[in-house]
Structures are given as C-alpha cells and as structure tokens.
Amino acid sequence: MNSEYFSQQLVVPASAIDEREHVNNLSYLQWCLDAAEAHWKRNASAELLKKYVWYVLRHTINYKAAAYEGEVLEIKTWVESSEGVRSERAYSITRISDEKVLVTAQTLWCLLDATTQKPAMITEEIRTLFMSN
Image (cartoon, rainbow, N blue to C red; front, top):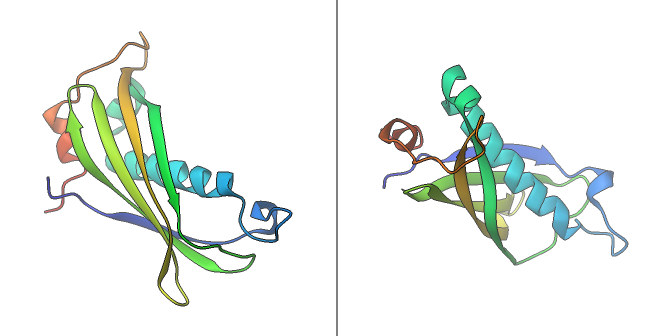
C-alpha cells in the first residue's frame, strides 16, 4: 500500500507538561489520535463521516526522547494496512528544531457502522482515501 502521509504541527502547551517538566506520555497518545481523526475528516466525504466511525483496538507507543514546553513538534501519520474491518495506522512525532524522532506509534483501528455500532468491512473507497497518487 502506497500510503499518503498526513502531518500537522503543534507548539507544546504548558498543559501537556508533567511533574518531571516534560511532555506527559498521555499527551503524545492524544496527539496521535487527533492526527488520525484530522486525516480521516480531511479525506472522507460527508457521507462516509456520517456512515462510519473508527474505534481503537490497540495502541503501541515507543518513547524515544522527551519534549518540553514551547517546542514545535510535527505529528505524522499514515495507514500501513487495511483488511477486513481492521486498519493499522502508524505515527511519528518529531521535534522540528533538531529533527529528532521523539515517538513512534501504531494503532489498530476497527471500522464500525455508525448506526448499528457493528464492525463494517473497509471498502475499496475507504482504502483508497489514504493512498498516495
């Protein structure tokens, strides 16, 4: 699968800092989820957004280095695979100033019918939303 990369930048807010004076691990997870949601909302039609929702089955996160208040980070995400009702999405979070990768992560998602809340097969239409040209 030739996946399209989606990225967004943020400045680390004071609210993300823990008692050790660096970014709290849960903040990284939230930023990954936010990027995945933004990617879905940017690429999916209004019809698809109404018809389907994604639920998390599993997260895996590797913390490689710390980030601090005021630093500019890039959160990058892409879909690695989609089969059946499941899709695996990868992430990297990089500090812009030195291009240091701070976090790598993966999430296993399940596509659900928004009305029935039951698993739905990932259609070719959905699969191609995240492929590069």
